[in-house]
Image 1 (cartoon, rainbow, N blue to C red):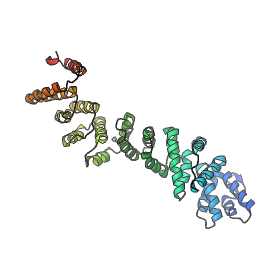
Image 2: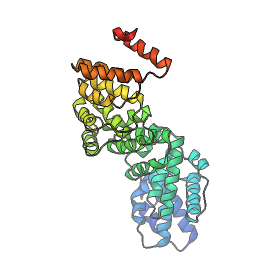
Image 3: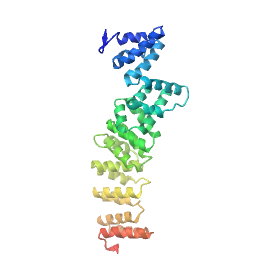
Image 4: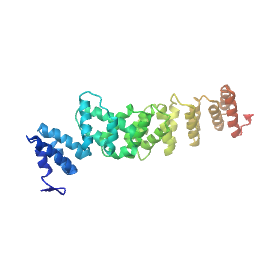
Length: 340
């Protein structure tokens, strides 16, 4: 009989031998199935549900090799680490991750197929290390099509650091899993709202072609915090949808906006011809330069009384000589006669 060009018994016969009463027969059957690799996949998959505990146990080990490519010394290490985890020990994982190479996420997927909490806990630990050590493109390639692995990446992201969260968003975007990338990105932006790369990665996930409509609907039903507010502004700027963002300003500006945030938002609103929204936004700004910008917008709207009152506010903000010179420079650029 021939299987995959190899002479000898078919995989199903070797699987039957996994339950032989003779130890040497069981050992040989396991080695032959490992040698067949992909050719043994279907037979070994069926053996995973065998009523014979010996067959089931060996089939699990072989399955990791034929499905995920975990074999040889790597399979031995994998088995030992899982045994330590199940025994309540703290296995040393860094060296193991270094030897995984292109099988890193395959190891995680194999662990997720186990039914016990210990295996899943070990998978979570490995993911954390892998995300910190390996590149996004490499991990995306290894994770492609594995729903369990992708779900674990999302679940583990709150426990990861800033750089690692950026990488998880990138991995998910590379796999066109924009909804998952948006979930991770939005959550991470609550912790690191000033991370430009994280904003860019999250934007990529929620732009039109991703799930922008869902994000607008989700955030539009609640009063957004600073990170979400800025993300929506960037999204509106990128997709030309300022008319969707301006009403959010009218509803109320979130606490915690920084001066740079105010500058970006005001410039965006004025450029997109929503000056009234910019006026409301800048009422919360603290710097003299931004309040001066509010003064000029009021004047452009024909509200001379409001502009005059705002000018008095500007003067009260000039607490330091540097503030005075900085404002004068800006006024000079605007050809304002009050610059002197």
